[in-house]
Image 1 (cartoon, rainbow, N blue to C red):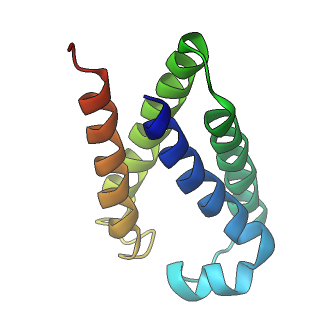
Image 2: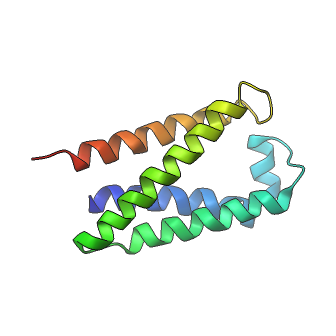
Image 3: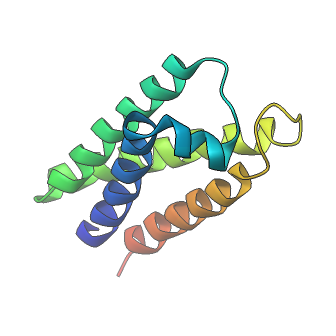
Amino acid sequence: MRRMAQAQGLFNVLGGVWPLVSMRTFEAVYGPKTDRWLVQTVGGLLTAVGTTQLMSRDPAQLRVARALGVGTATTLLAIDLVYVPKGRISRMYLQDAACEIALLAGWVWTSRPR
């Protein structure tokens, strides 16, 4: 579980910091944004979640990291799958959907009984 928490934590931190550091490159990949403040808010939240996951060490912390990870991945996946087909967000978000599915699969794999 620790490796999974670290992997998703790094993914979330990198994805969260990106629009905070360079909105220009973020928009070049994911398309122009009307409400940049909202993109930056989500970026800040992803950075906070990812940092928490990266700091997780003991079993109790890892359970929290898993809950944060599953909740975050499920939410982002749902947004991707609802709003890409509606044309509200770029088709590039389908690559994010694929990553979120992989992260959810990783949590299922690491949480299985041994």
